[in-house]
Length: 218
Ligand SMILES: [Ca+2]
Image (cartoon, rainbow, N blue to C red):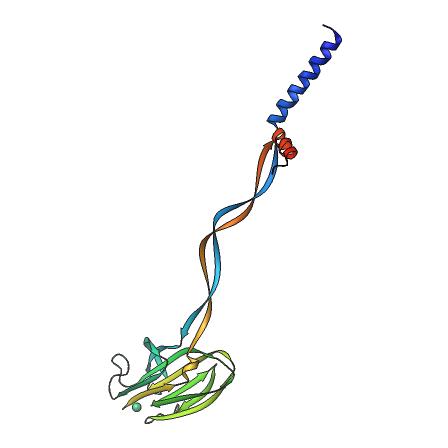
């Protein structure tokens, strides 16, 4: 075989092998695609809140101190219970005491009127300070007391203490309705399906890649 024929054979072989390699070798390419996906969204919703009293009842000792707890109950925030000489809680008609706690929310900074009435003794705390007291030490027949209490805007805690020794029994509490209803922010999550842009890496053979480049295809 002549030298020239060998050269052509080598060149042809080289071209054929090169194309074969180009077809086989893959190169990675990126593209952005839209995919339908389930995503979790977090929303803020307003939850209506209403104040209630979480009350615990105690036996009252002979020296007018709270003894052991005898039960608990939830009471509406506005109280007007007139037990007269009947049962106050469970089978207790005498020597019974209560401690109730609640939260209120002042819509603006100003004074709000609170009323308390009791037979025998009661007192009201707001944020751990006594703001109203009805015969707490001495007891006695039913009587109402009231006070205008300055509150800064926002949430406050209330504690109501009450005791009944003997005879008639009654408890009364009032405060502005606007303090007892408010809305609280609450986070909720929900799943929803939406189109999401996503980068996908895929491989393309070199020859197709070159041809696409030449043809201007994406
Ligand atoms: Ca009494």
